[in-house]
Length: 354
Image 1 (cartoon, rainbow, N blue to C red):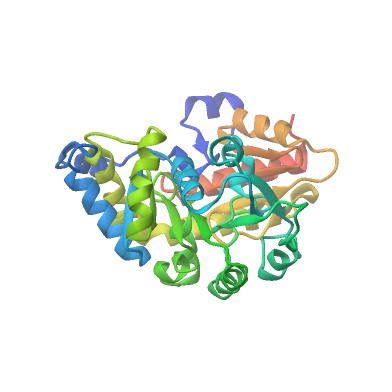
Image 2 (cartoon, rainbow, N blue to C red):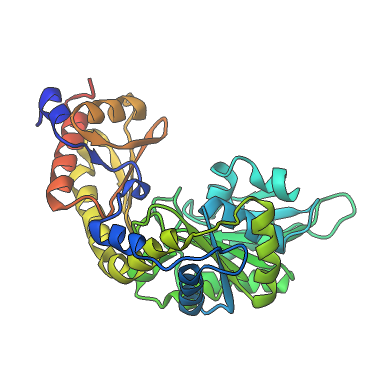
């Protein structure tokens, strides 16, 4: 295993997230050569091309480019919900835990966390049970939010049949659906399902370009033409109107063309890492569907201590909870990196994190 001194001299293997990727030289060239305009005044041509391309891929009428996935998520929620009501979503959803209470602060919503029956991700039966009967004494619901892949569950894919079942429940209760599809690209690759079929379960869909696609910035919200016309004003209100944003949109287009087709490599490396570290020192891996590896630690092992020990040896991983570690494969790690990272983590688990 590398010593701390040797590791310090080399570039770290960064598995904290797929957001840590750097633009490739080819992506930087695409950005430098992008045709641009003022997107707020009269439209940036490269942004328009990105919006039209992704709307077509997702099977939606129109799409809007946003600086971040969080802003696009919050805009989708704003468009579909009613203030003073509740939104039903998975108890471990990104929208609950990692968007600084935006549901409440921006849209005046109460989160109604749904605990999945199988402990993985929200299913149709769990959603049905969570919807309150009408009552003058209880909040009513105005929205259902889904997440695919599900970050907190370890990149878990909700398959098409279950998405359709969830949509059916929402429709019966006259509830619109927003899909946090930050890693919907991964779900499509992992299942071989056309991404438009996965997106069809929702009225609005957010997809991110700064994760598996390797772009430095950006996300997109797609839906009906009417919803996106309103969404343009919501984006402006939230501070998301950009000017020569084609420089950024060009990176997203490059990622779609060149990095989406190789995303299966990230999934294969996640499986390799999972096999390497599963069982080491009593730790257990959540079998990865895509590019996220969650490792549940045995009693007496601290996630923060393990992450610190790995960092000292040149491998960066994230404490997810006090007893769970997250590692994410991506464009900037190769097979040799995964072999090294797996050996470091396994050794720490077997021999102690100090």
